[in-house]
Image (cartoon, rainbow, N blue to C red):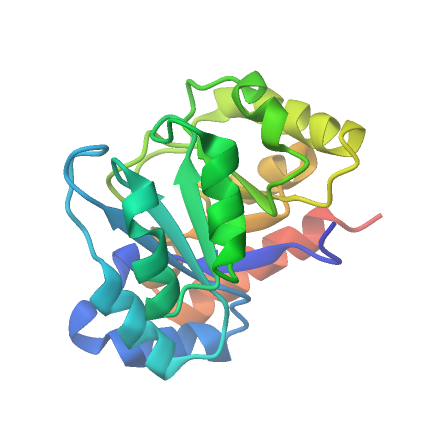
Length: 226
């Protein structure tokens, strides 16, 4: 398990005219990972970014690049994203015909392998690969657009995943993605989350990126106080 909650700002809400600067600001404010949401307009409605953006991010930070593929046929893209600089690659169980083979392919490329599941997908859908996955990414919004509200009905599933991971003897981290802010993070942490993806809460914070990061860090540290 993570020694303390990890925060992974998602550049989905960043100002792309100043992307390098905004990544640097998040890093200086204590970001642990940089999260990159890749959407193809098929698996989810929007089209967001691809390998070129991952490569650009790689040039401006040494933080782990946490690449979330919300795409159809993810297996065809694994090598190109690894070569672009991804450190972690998440694929959706809903999009992979053989999730075990996909996760092993990611690891063979030298990346951490993450299995993602949508809010409506039960924890049992990934039970068979908990011993393989490095990260389990639980969506707490329906994947697609930034700024959606946190789906609290997913909290029991996070607890179920935490228990299943422990039972499997796995070291997989639970990553929470969607609607995470200073108000929702504590409940997700209590349920078993360890890594928290935040887009709008960091890059759209009224007082700026550093303030957004500080609000999340303070909420996480307050939540784990004995």
